[in-house]
Length: 329
Image (spheres, rainbow, N blue to C red):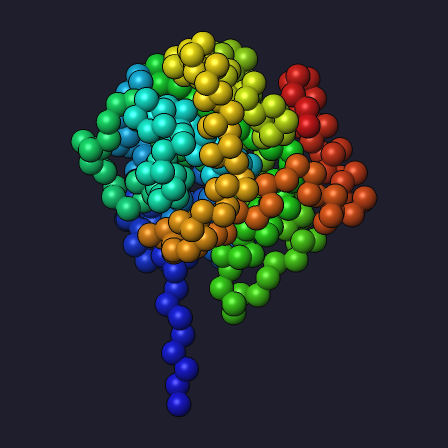
């Protein structure tokens, strides 16, 4: 009797690539992937081939509008959380945070704020944006150098979120192991650590990704808002207020008095989001369970997993990489 194998999830499929992407892949440096078998180095950063196809299509076809907002993150740095916050912030005149029918009650933040290269331009080489109302809200993990020219040329706003590299590494390790098929086995923390330190991670090297946006935020603070996960967790209301001002939709004194900011923070809190039914069941069209995007959301969880030698080495690498930039973790 034959045992039927579970179908390969879409996020691991590699048979729907365009000829352009296939031709490019053969010329790129490769490394071991974290979930898919291989990473390809494009414009200085590592990607699985499916993401790379989405990047190529996005670079070619995306037409940014001046009123667009783009949430940019290093993977596993609080993307889901900040998607929820940005959606609620920018749509607060349409949906009150306390409304029972608020879209977050029945939709994953990843549905409300879709990824450009991992969703829209991966599903369609040139997607139709006619149903998107202005101001549009998108997200991406693309490094600054890989953003489409139309984003650089427009007045659209970029909100960049990054996280302590030690917590980023641990979260990425847990996340990617959940996405690996059973027959692949789990990747050890030691192996993941070596890859990360060598700059080989999704959209890595981590430090190059962060520095690209950090330097741009210093040059052009009206276009790039740079935010650390730890700061947002420590003072969410303070940074929510700054975000609203940066996006040109500041909170009124009436909203301040009515504690709208606190209400948004509460609605979008890790505890609330992770306990909503929509984030516990179901999958993205690409096959990932909604639940894999929620683990702990804590600052400093790396202390429970990394050895003192690992911490010392990663801290040393980051000190070298960020030296002279004015940025530290």
